[in-house]
Image 1 (cartoon, one colour):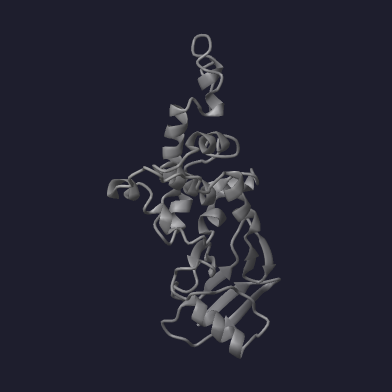
Image 2: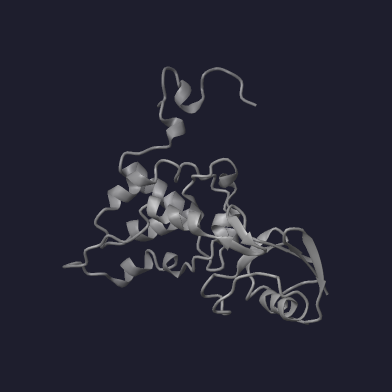
Length: 238
């Protein structure tokens, strides 16, 4: 079985490991063929998210993906590569702070029901693998986009009945945030935990509207005779 890995150059390896995970194959290569190969791993149980990478153009967890002959393996996108398949996630993590994607709660006197818990139960399963961050196409045009990685966490806290500063979080994600998302759904497709960041961003847009915000592209309003606000200015659209 042949596997190709994007390193400083593209390198091919032959491995005989039937029904093996990508992480097992990488370990075989490192221990028996090329000790210089670098990659990240942790729990080996699809829980820690540290072994996320791309195979044939799609984000996967190496510990769960079953290798196929001819697979092309490369590091995550939209992040700096440290070496081979090891990437620096610091910038992705920094967007959590910029988006205020953290709890600021006061549970005193607040009863959290089972219905309340289910509002963000799925979002709480995020393993910080960064797959959604890598898959997002918006970073090609806006490197400061808060992104699905952080915005889905914002929804987790905004939907928490104990959250004290919901409006502050909503105000924070208006610039380089929810309106920059194209709703392409690539983040949802690659999430190993089946979290739909697209849906979370749509919910944040609805909540933003309730707080008086709107899509900046419509900020001009309707204008005269359905003017510039919605593009109805009499000019042809192609």
